[in-house]
Length: 166
Image 1 (tube, rainbow, N blue to C red):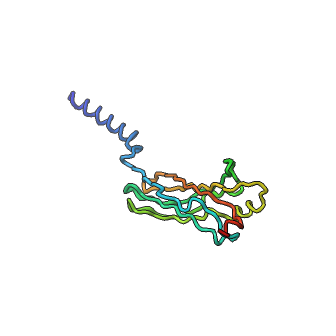
Image 2: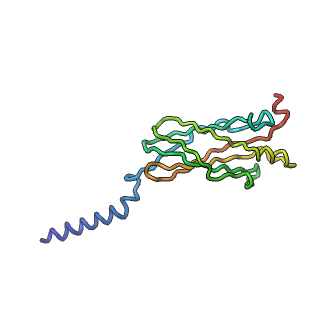
């Protein structure tokens, strides 16, 4: 009968440990491991005054483990060379749906960091704020409901007549 007390105590202790720690441990609910492989082009320099002719940005992502995830949305924020936020250009919670399912496979995400509002700001600004840094904050959720955030940065230059002549 003495052993029943020890067994019951150990069982209660084990149950307590599993309930309070086991569900929060990464071994039970591992998180996707995502890497930003490259950002192309880093410097985006318009060759015309038309937004339609500005090249898109491509962010290459790679899933490093076997926990699949989905890119759900992104924020796009802008900062001057003096690191001041340009709040009226920022965009938040832009929906997107791109799955990352295979470990080691590169997934290219095409994004449009240059906006008409940025063109207009460059045209109306008397000061030289070029280049503007655009930051994409990418929001992922994996199959275990873990949330992952990654960033990709670009420099966006003002269109100059002389830059299209070269």
